Image 1 (tube, chains in turn orange, purple):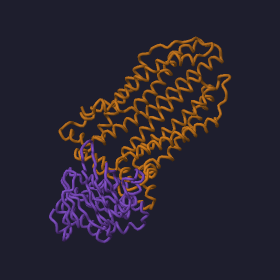
Image 2 (tube, helix red, strand yellow; image 1 turned 45 degrees about the horizontal axis):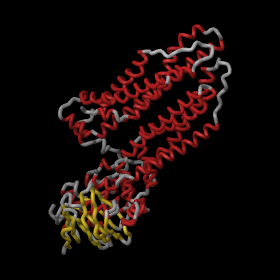
Image 3 (tube, chains in turn brown, green; image 1 turned 90 degrees about the vertical axis):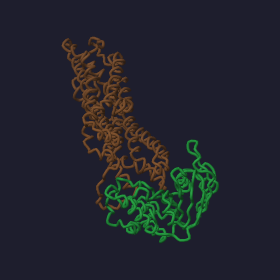
Image 4 (cartoon, one colour; image 1 turned 30 degrees about the horizontal axis):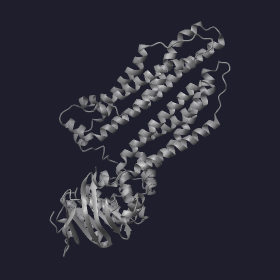
Length: 379
Length: 226
């Protein structure tokens, strides 16, 4: 087997993102399907407006959550497959040299779809487990109470279909990435990536140059780190601000999902960043660069993008809640106007600075553990 | 002056260095010679402060390495030590100029361009390591190590990954720069012929020093066998 099941299950980040997406989509879509037939029987205008707003919100939330997290999970999966191929290009090159076709090797990457299947299956189960509680919190006074019904096609759409699509994506990307000539794979060409001459002629401080070049060579991680900060900012602020518009349960759920997504994406990004820079960091340590200098040379360039992610998250959550109030709940009486929540913004920003500074400090300790002997012996 | 007394080091239960003692004078060129597994690279890493010995004492120009913690060893390496490795370890995403700057920036050396010129890479300043030959990459390593103005230069099989012609050329650069600049140089190698270029040769076997001798006449890189 080209890729072991153990390797496939290492994509914990993808599993967690799929879990979150399917968890939200399961109860929202199930609610949407179960509550939809009741619409025809509601005659009261105000009640009808509230009902349609609630239905629209369920649909809207599912589309946004499923869409955004689906794209993120897809990008992360491709990123993992790329890392896997780069890390094992020699073995893959040897297999190719022995005569295995590219498609045969690529099909072995189906294993990466397992992590998606597990995440989706667990998300679906968790969504079902919390269905009663969610239905209870979304009950509209005056509308018949509904009980959750099982929809087999929903399970297919939220568990089996994504697993199949992501499996195809993993195999497809592997097929594309394995197009390199055999000798290039065997020599580990990706490890010794051919950087072009730098003719910029700019004379910058070494540490600035180092952090800029690290940033330039890891553009996808810029996206993930910014996304982590976006999740933290958007979902913490939304979770804390939404109490006037939805139930407290919904607020806590948004808060928890935001923190999980932010933590998973950040840990995955920084771990990958540090692993790919291990030799450079060890070399800088051997030469006598301090812990702070080493940390900044690797992580420093990403700081502005973390703040950009936070700002975009703030604008996004404000825009989303404003749309929800002004469009979806426009005809519903007694819905309070939504204004930008300044105290929540400052609390979230303070928490953001504390959490991300603590993360940088933690990883600084990890960086310090790199043995300088390691680069001499290549253990 | 480097003085090591009764150095011992163990890895995973295997005694790699056994009671090693030696003295190296300022400006001396010493070759540590031995077969694979003799403990020479471990001795190099302990003498250079890359790692600590389990027991024994090392005095490098007045600094007792066993008294230093990790930050202290980092500061020591910054002040005293330069490294040249067999596998170059250039930063792949930085060009030649910036790779050399990695060493120069630590010493605040603004005139590192002269070292790049001395190793014959003046016209490759903006090239990335992947655009250089093995010999050129090793010359970048030499420039990077010397740009930080080290008092002691440690070399771990610097010609080990090079063919004979390129190896001689690189060795020639190293020997010339050492004689011009007068820094202490400690080189680990398994190539017995390279030992003929050193002032002092320390032979090692199974973690022990088995012989120390001085060459009455030193050969240059093109006079030795390979």
